[in-house]
Length: 362
Image (cartoon, rainbow, N blue to C red):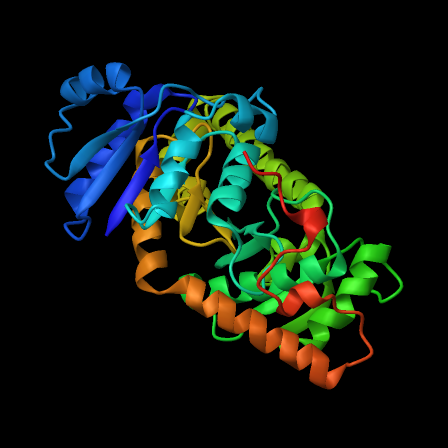
């Protein structure tokens, strides 16, 4: 197993990410090669100071960094030697099986789509985010790769999200819901109302519309929406979790009696914290491109990198891309057979993305 880690885009600097790489290598002997991507002048002394001396580790040079302020495609055009692009190219060139990055999300999506291209039958890739629920976890697609979508895009996101839920979360028949402002058929937007019958005809375990209340109360296993809405859901959930944590700390340390109660309940509170910790899930894969691309949070720490490495290894071992291609083909056939009058574009069953959605080359 060969991995590439872009260590230049994180909020905590490359040293913290290298510590995660060190943990991941120590825990998984199946990793035969790991490339850390960035400027050698920066990484070489950090590898020495962090004690990263594993013989499987190698530096892959990249002299530039795509920052959060850079516009994705324009930034990639100007910074052709940036770490994100060089890391993705290792997968394209067959030198790595998966790439992990905490950098600019739009840059990762653009670099992967341009350099790796989409899988057969898939028009656009989607970011799949694993989110905690009352008693388990669910998958959010799209987490931010595609702010504007067609109904066919949502159908493909649903299929990929369902396949990912089965493979990575062990859900035998994932319940797939389209996010809306209510469960009634009259609710939703033009986009969701057009996507819903496609998803129902695809053979997925469709529950129809789901609403915000369902997401964290075990009402759905896969939530489907465009990337604009999905990113709002993701960021809102993250901020709510941090706010609740801050409020708990404040209230539980307000007086000695509460501090005593907090000490007694420490085990339960720690359990909740562990279940709510996004780092435990690794990262968010970009489903639908050749190879394996995993986006981790910009504020990722070493444990997040460690878990993302394990996630990437499992993704590749499961042959998830082959599963996605098969699932997309089956869904397209099911829609064509059961509902031939539904307007499904040719791209749903084609290996070539439609021209308007194909990103410009760089």
